[in-house]
Image 1 (cartoon, rainbow, N blue to C red):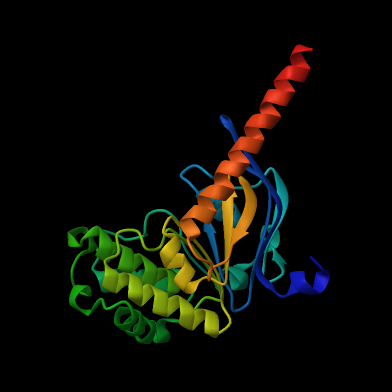
Image 2 (cartoon, helix red, strand yellow):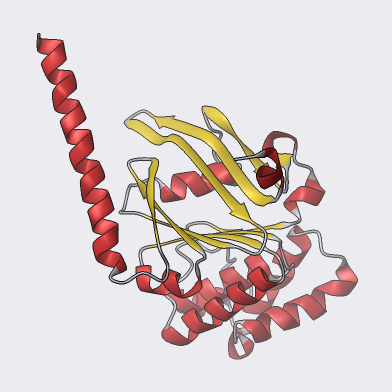
Length: 258
């Protein structure tokens, strides 16, 4: 990647390695998300998708490698940089004792929104994710799908330009999936760089400009969002990679025994 290409990225990870006691979670991943791009990562459970997102967001520190947000090294990112980031990784942040609206008001303040702008942004988020009937209901009483809507609204209400969403369609009903799809496409058109992970290839193909396949903590290839039979192409990549790793392991064992 040239310096000019790197400078145009909203989010960039270079040479990311993260080791855990049971083995490596990430094995040298390079990944970028450009302005106006929706970049999807897909992989089987345990492939490293969530670990990658947590490293990109500073929730986990990589053993080696670096992350940049709008060109700023994550290690020196200030509040203004973080104010441009919206994320939902794993469970939505929702305070059960607060209403849907109360959660969004808290999220706005945590994002650094000035008090005088909070109501307008919260009203817009409620409309965007069709939360009007739940705005005054405690989130502890909401279904998992509606809590997910609250979490997505909270992550996006401050109009972030760097968006990271881990399995954002989890528990959403078809109407919620459509609302999210429209939201992401609108934000990408406005210049946001968006990274999403998913198990649902058909859904990510509807919105993604790029699809990267993750396996065993590595980026092993890409899929064409406009391609035919994405599931077969995905499993061909994963099974081929698994076979290559098995062959390499046998070769190593043979050399060690010689």
